[in-house]
Image 1 (cartoon, rainbow, N blue to C red):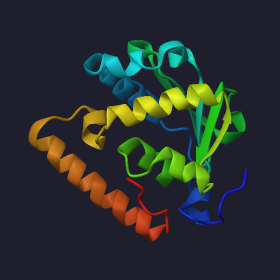
Image 2 (image 1 turned 90 degrees about the vertical axis):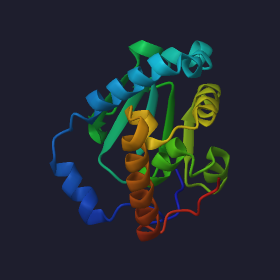
Image 3 (image 1 turned 180 degrees about the vertical axis):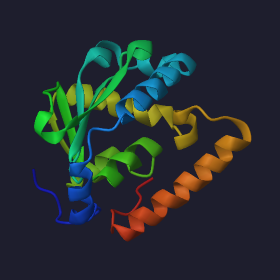
Length: 178
């Protein structure tokens, strides 16, 4: 894997601090969010077709944890593992956390960050392409992913977008591509 050094990466001190902490229950919260999304937007999961049972390893290279996503609609799971305990998967998607988040919120185009080497894909590229197309079609805001509606949705999206924009500048992350 060839990443541009330090571009968009969390500082080493923060990486070490996160490594001391136990695996947080973030996987449980993400599983609930993905399942909620499957109930409200089942069309997205239908687009995955045969890949909905694939195991995708999401590898934020600048934190000591990885995620395993199985996007099986209302039976979807997201699990979090310490890097040393990372399972195998059909595909691995690796990059700085801020870039991976930008793929979800539409800040970054997957092709663009792949060709600039800010994102590395390994394994079943057809499965990754199906996931990418599904994410692109979803056009999710952070609040929509988390299940917020109405005024709270506006507030959550505004605060999240400001925070992520500031973090991208602070970390010298790649320039937005979409």
